[in-house]
Image (cartoon, rainbow, N blue to C red; front, side, top):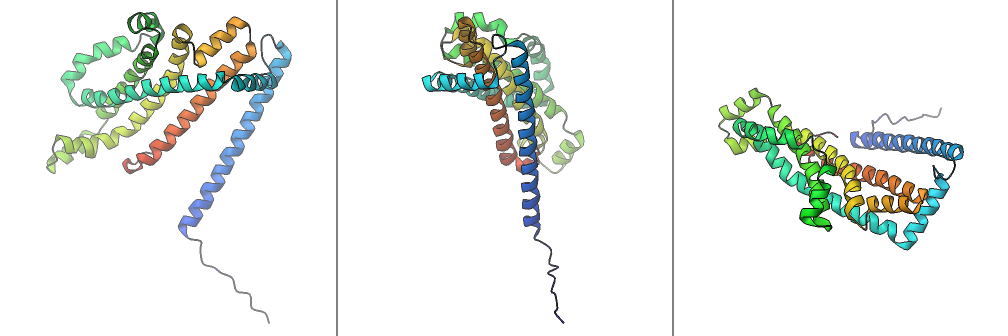
Length: 273
């Protein structure tokens, strides 16, 4: 009689997790691919329905993208817009996070600054485009300042909201254990506020893309906003589609990179993105 030996040893936990993560990753990629194909199909139908003068087809847009890439226009536009967005958004984070922590913790400061924050955050950056050009010129400074303006208030509001949402019992428990103000900030307030900061950073990134187009249309020779405006002047609908789609793809990539970096760097705070 042949004896069949069955290995009943369970797989190691790490191996099971890796296998599960791989399956989830493949499923996500498959869903993304299906979603993109459906979108391209709808896009093609709209192009067939309204004609190339109104809606450039996927093939025409791809051909125009290749044309602009060979000339170097598309690459230069992507680099110029990305640089402006990252600098302005980064400055918004660098100022907004400390300011939000400060405002959220000190009531008097919050009451003094709240009228200005609530006033300026309702004024769209495009309203300041002319003043930015007059005050700072048509160089990089005016566009970076506009992106900083659109980012900083979002970050401040989200960060201060996170600070004020910290449970009072946690603060009292830390104080009763002898923690000073700095230790409470690092050990209690900041970990609880991290999800709010990440949300503010993502929202600020989205608003930065909205602002860069209006800023570059008015005061730039190079950039995706300038590309869209120039294409409109030349009647090149396919170039307009290239600029719009490039903005969307670039924003999608920036947001995903932000989520990956944040999840890895801030994992010790218990943040799940």
